[in-house]
Length: 183
Image (cartoon, rainbow, N blue to C red; front, side):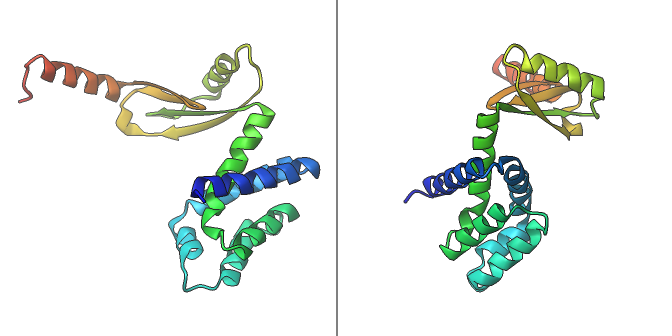
């Protein structure tokens, strides 16, 4: 079976159980934390290491999830490892997060700037993005000094690059196509 479909099926089953048990918020928070954990190289190495027994890998991930993790989350991690699907844990967590966002009308917004953005600007951006649709905005801010100025805005699957770096690259490309050589 396609690996993406495996993760989607597990995530959908977890989402349905969380909805049924009225635990979507708690599991959503756990899956966000689990997704961040699974992005760490050390955790990836533990999950995918065939030398470490499945039970030890499962115990390690459950311990990293913490004592305040929902019972459903702990059971889900156990299920994934008991069926030999530990490698799909990160993808299942991402899919659960996406399902929850769609269900709750949460829009994911990431803004990248060269300097930190003040709270008033964040609120103004959130209001503009929410617009007529309403819903909740999850705002993530990233600082990247290499963009020099301006911003890069990602809203769900849309991408706007209004950075100085992007404009300089476009000018450089236009000049090179026009026959002006860089010296």
